[in-house]
Image (cartoon, rainbow, N blue to C red; front, side, top):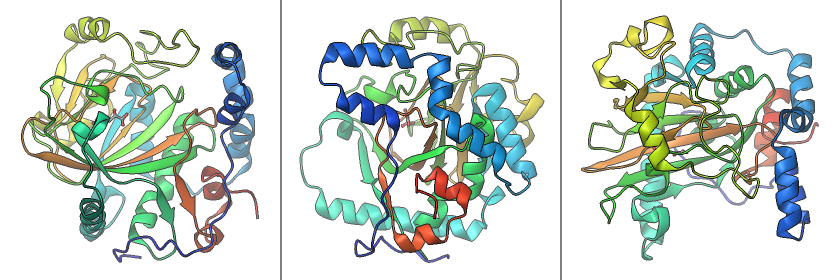
Length: 347
Ligand SMILES: O=C(O)CCC(=O)C(=O)O
């Protein structure tokens, strides 16, 4: 599997299951009805109902035993909303070079095709690859569909999770000097529980846009109820940053690069049982697992740049469209658990 290739558009694709919320929301023609629907779905009963098939399916399926590293990541995610690992704990170290090559192949293609003026998030971010097409014998497909990641998400969410997609980001110094969009504290509003897996492709130093996370601000954490979780239209919005800043100012700030490897997880981590801000300053090949419903921000590059790959798993409650395609050949090789995670109907 260790070959760097770019997806072929020629393969036959399978159709993927939609998220029910998106489908229903689209069907509602008036803002008023959409708001009512959104407010109705923002409760635990609706959340469980919408996910019922996926919750039950996890109990019915036999998964391989959870490895020590997977268990560590799951436990840390449950306790703090974030967990750390090194790429080499999941893959051969050489495979990192292959994935790095994939990143730069996509970036070269992006640079060839994108000459337009940069607006919105484009002011500080190039999405060099996004709508991935999963095909056989392709390294990027193999990395992005790593079953261990899906297992972690499933144990964290207590259901078969849904793969939403991936983004390959080149983040650079912005044209303005203030933080904008995801550089500001926010909760990802598309679901109430998410697992994002960030892989640093470059070393991320203090000037290079490290991710920051408030531990304990995930849904089940002690700060999980803080701030506006449901906007006035029923769809969650960015919280008021002045309010978040006030809370954050009271928390200890921990720079990840000041810790040794044993202090980055479990009870020896300085944030264990103590809400804190982690500044994820870390070398390339660092894997960060985060429930981004928890408060986070990042990508505020002041010098140099940051290259990173992000994978997103959500529940079935998501209001963002999945952004990926799956070829028939790739789908045929997935086990029932991964087929369900990818939203592919049973064989
Ligand atoms: O670029 C970053 O570090 C922030 C990422 C982020 O906000 C997100 O993925 O939701």
